[in-house]
Length: 74
Figure 1 (cartoon, one colour):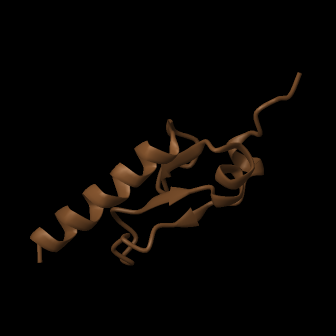
Figure 2: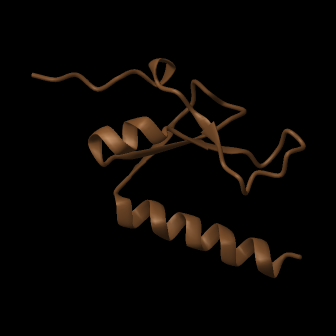
């Protein structure tokens, strides 16, 4: 039986779509995604808070949504 790594054991990376001002920051765990196919996403300000667990297609949809909404808000 394999156990899921704890969030604190993963390397988290800030999204390039984050605002760089300390707010609106989303992080994801790329090595975990490569190893398992599960894309884990969290709010960087609440590292012990809830996480989203997305499939590859779900993560791609989230990224596309962020691109589209970011372009519209400029």
